[in-house]
Image (cartoon, rainbow, N blue to C red; front, side):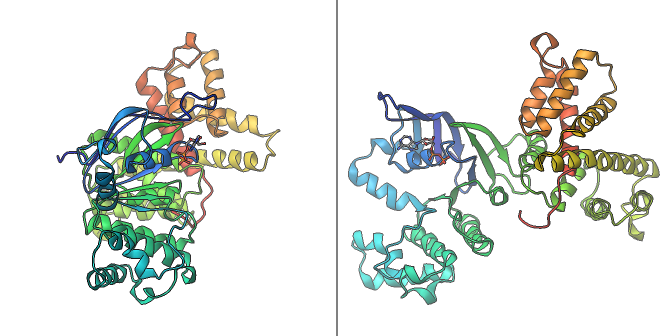
Length: 441
Ligand code: ADP
């Protein structure tokens, strides 16, 4: 594996150090980013994403940490070396529009080359060539004021690429754009990553953009909460295979606050049913799951389709396995109705009479799945956790942790495996119970 291109060890950045309003914006972030990776920093506003960005860029010195970019500490550079670093190693794209309005598009793109004494006869054709790549060459003589948001950002991408940097840093590059322009800009970044093999780092709080990244760094509260590899991308960093499976569910559950399209539900169920099948069989299984999720197929037809021979249009499973699977799917979809009802009432703020019954039922489903005996305290605590998770008061990890905490310490007292299994099962019901809207993601 190659050496990391960016390495942070215990990054700490404190604003207003020593003053009454001293504030620690990042609290010990460690990560390694490898050459050719596309990574996303994802997290709510104020969690420290931009602070890290500025620190990597060499303009916000950390109060404590080790930070290396291409093996060097940018804060040890002389002023000239720093300028060289910021123009040749890192290209930057900001959310807020930072082109200069009084000069043309092409002059904006090649501006840094002007500073470095590249003659006009060389820099203009080069600028044009880059603009052409992002389908902006026809606008090269326009002024930035006259561009649409998406065109403007594609000029920003061209400008960031003009010195052929190793790393492209983009801070909410699509924050102000509509969905069509967003896709164009994201596709341009993907191309720079895949074709030019540049390392691309984006800051985003748009979950739909995470699919572009090899890895997602979930930030929260000035810390790196966890790192999630994207199972659909061939990884560059070394990843524990075991983790990819677990984290696909993590990724899905993270998406819960948003409206999940049918495809996410399909993925989740396929994951749940394990993957002992060929790719062709999986694709068929996905098709049938889509039909049953959309209520376009009955349970009987579903079971038959699973056991029908592959050549006759089925998935080709044994009739036993087909029966077990269709029973599981039906049960989950049925139970998910209750999470859907709960969310509807909860978001409509109108759940006073029925909410308790729904939580009782959901708790019962989990207990049935668990099979072991629970005493009254355990049942009461489980019910509380079910409510807290459904109301969004705790995250999936906290749910699992509380299940695994001993009874005398206020938990449910499960051992790790049943705690994990119950959480996995519950998350599946929650995902399937989301209202489905066919947009986004
Ligand atoms: P994000 O990019 O995730 O929205 P930021 O890195 O911009 O978060 O900010 C992290 C925290 O640091 C926020 O609570 C913010 O208010 C605080 N902060 C950012 N810049 C400054 C500053 N110059 N002085 C004091 N606090 C700051």
